[in-house]
Image (cartoon, rainbow over all chains, first blue to last red; front, side, top):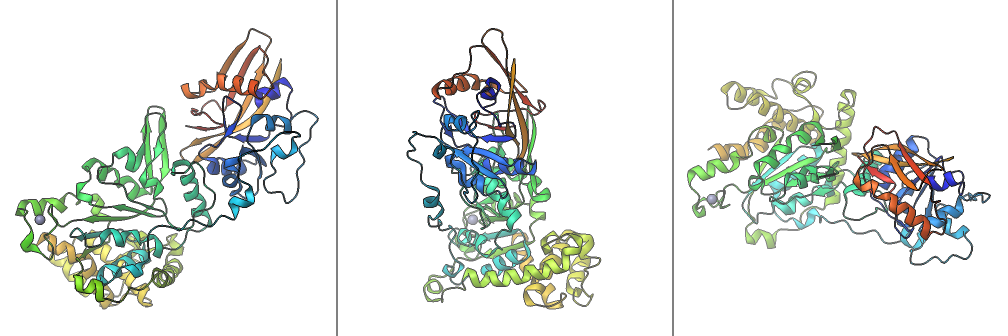
Length: 446
Length: 85
Ligand SMILES: [Zn+2]
């Protein structure tokens, strides 16, 4: 376009941003990343962008910009040709450059109205009502959602760990405008489809397989560093199933995003940083054969194997996980006889209420959730009454609990308090938090 | 000698940076010069641009075409008008 402008063939292109791939035949093809590109252009004061027809909806997700679409470079040339003023019609959301060209046939492209009215694709993930029984695990999932806590599920194969994890996004607050824009922009750059058509409101869910490479999980690539699962899980859930089966290197690479909310990818040309703030759910069998919990008699592993298995997860990553629960395999009778569980919508209502209370309390420290509260705050300004923490203090004094473990119990206690509608943790909240967190730790060390 | 301008965007991570595309058609022998840290994939675009222009019926002249991508400090890669860094 700029070359044509040099020729004097077209005018008025110097303030217009062009975002499309130019084919050898002159066709304009969709490109990835239109949403963040248009957003950046608008922030820089650009008022008009030209995109391929396929990218029209995506570009129009950014407010405050005129989106012109074309399917061929010649349409753009005509629209900007000397002496041919492009009419800017009011109310015409996608002025189509092609329509202004005489004698040119438009073929193939679906009309804007057609695709705008298309029924929304149902979101995967399922409803919590489908999880029967499993009262403890359901409660733990709700606590994780309410306080934004990372969660470790330990249980035998078939206990329903995946089924539970997949239902976390459905009980998380829908994404606000800024987060929705961020998540949709990531989808535009790294998603399965070449273009996105609407803002994403449901928190994303990513579940990399345990054989996944570091590049697939955190991002990477030879020439361009493409975002990985941790970035696609931004503002949503990263589910690390069968965590001990992952390569150690991959688990270690999760440390940076869990601690800082971003991932830096280093390449020869320089480093690139992508957002990667997610809620982590790790799941693990209790031992290599999976039978050590509940059905210890069937476990065929040696004592050393059992000890070593979950030890792979210890260290900095486990330090960030506030909540560890055991998921028992449902007995077949309870599977069929239990009433359907409470629906995701009902649980979400309580989560939203608990989140609102947290925001009111934590807003002045620029925090939103109990899981973000640092040690200094929990043992300082937000320290519960000493009567409430008597048992916890005793455990710390006995050496039965590390200082980090102590702080994690306090975070959980606040979330339980908020869920119960109390204003500050009482002994029952702190004790229940100790139970939630220690149940699997004790079994593992015992 | 004449100069033309348009704009594109280069994405660094999720951050977009506005790029000015300056084209200059000189009087010397036919050539295509792309400046401003393009990588190999972007350098291929010279054929694409000439071919696309020809297929659009608005041929570029057989003269020296210099395209400069500014700011030059950002490395640029890709085939479209969105470049990745
Ligand atoms: Zn076993």
